[in-house]
Amino acid sequence: MKRYMSIAGVVLLASCASPETPITRNNSQITFPHYSIVVPPDRWHLLRPNEKAEVAVVTTKIDLGLGEPATYRMQFARNEVLHEVPRSWSARQVADDFRNMEKQIMIEQGVRRGQYKLSDVVMGEESVGDKKFYTMKYTASDSHVNQSASLYLYFPREEKNAYFMVIHYSEIIPRGAAIVVPFRRDFLETLKSLRINE
Image (cartoon, rainbow, N blue to C red; front, side):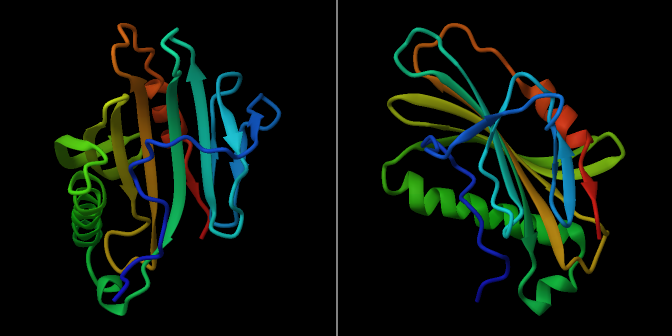
């Protein structure tokens, strides 16, 4: 039985073919009915947002001269708790259930099928600004790229949540790259800007 609304998988090794819009000072705030974020301008591109599902994906790429660029991606999504039982759980219980489920999906659909290797999986908590996030950080790699990724879950309440935010940040670097330009500071700024509209 499905416990949560279906969202895109957290391992995003493939690039999207959706049209991109440069993020400037004039369009850096991305607003949906239930939440909004502000992305640092002049470095990122917004893929066409899914208004109905309230999913926003922003990316930036850097040419490292290796044939494939380094790709950095932030994904924000509102995830509904569909089943009545987890709606009665604490935020931590839902976070643990969701993170374990995502890890199992990556193992079953990626690792066991030989699509990539999964390592350095660490679950924890992190405060950014005035918000507490439940996290899962990991590395996924195949013969072409290494991906360092972080999953952040935000709950409006400590218990009885009808939904929660699923946020994913990844740095996808071609194998053999000697220079890695981190954009994690931009991600943390965007995370800090998250506003929930209930």
